[in-house]
Length: 174
Length: 438
Image (cartoon, rainbow over all chains, first blue to last red):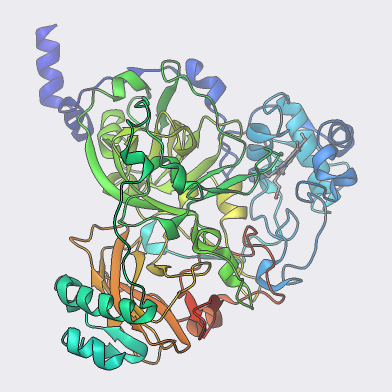
């Protein structure tokens, strides 16, 4: 025991040595215990769960759970339009930024809907439901064919039209 | 009038047009006071009345409450709410900066923005985890974090959308609170984030951390890992007491100088990665549109800015004479080194007194003695920081960032983000103050 502890002190990597000088009151947590919270989806598709859904399935879910705020056919209501492609310069610098005209990454859609929507009761949707809603919104915006299912393989490949229109403001801070 | 004043006190040195006085006048308070009293007396000509005891001096006062609140005579010093009924959209509470002085925003008045209301978090049940590209994923309780060595620092937090009404092509007639109330400054106490990053042991290939809150939307933002090691903090206390619920109780990420939304409230998770997550809030809301239809991405920093809080729109000058012009300056890139003030719409400038020592990425109070002669004047301020950054003039700012095509009608909308140019208050001959552009 003592020997192991001594060896750990001698051979520990820099980060571990730094940790030895701090209180170290965090408890190790296993991936399975983390699972419910491990919901971030990265633009390369990392974090996308198994499952799949189509625009037709998504349309029904949308009517039921989303149209109340985002409007019939996702054309906008008390919350922003989710289907619609107004010009990004229609109102100059105050133009409405939408999924079709502004969003740079398709994965953001899955990440945001799964974590945050429907607004009054987040995280009631299954992963299949979220894929279906992504398919519905992307097809409605003519970014994928009507019948293309969305899943961990197809979603990250959807190219968003505005993807390359961003200027990194502070590149030296990254 | 002029004669009387000059006989009562030595003439004060004017350093710029329309009556701006040398800041020395603030140090030698006696001289200013003599001048002000002389002109005040000349204006009113009223003799003082004999003194008597007011009612509150004739009976014992109220019982002491456990939690103090301001005097009932300060009833108007409250925040303005954008969504008082809690409809399904964001709630903003703007700080009444024009009624405050010094550099600290009291906790009940600190601005807040909640995208889905204030979660009612039991600190005993709150958990924080750090995982991803780390040697060891770790989970912390709030109780454990409170045992860590703590540091205290004064920093402003500003919403990236603060002052959005200033993008209007015509000046919005609105108060400091309505225009600029989404910024506040507090003394934050917490754990340097580097301590926790070291305990988890970040992978040398890691470059980003994705911070997430425990609110119902689990608001998440990508932060460059280098900021985490630089000066980021897990804040637990705000101005000496535990965080206000609207400011992130029981714990928040504090990223000094970075736009408010990145300072994740109700912090529950940090995922260490080698790429940004491109979250909704960073790639949509906080990516400001440019006039040509392109947009800025990762506009982390709230750049150098200042505005006059007193006098300002809604406070009219009753009579000519002495006034103190005062305001706040701050910068997400450093420490305020200089503030210039003009009373003639930028034709001439005088250096304001900056109350020091100024702290980096914190409110700095500036003051400028002013003798208003009763003629129209336009007062404004401009700030510099120690990184060499200077607050841009409006013409230069608008040339780059644009302005709206139609006048903005509500000060509570967000036509764009990250306005840091000047604010000008126009005083007319009656002492009425309007918001103007020059």
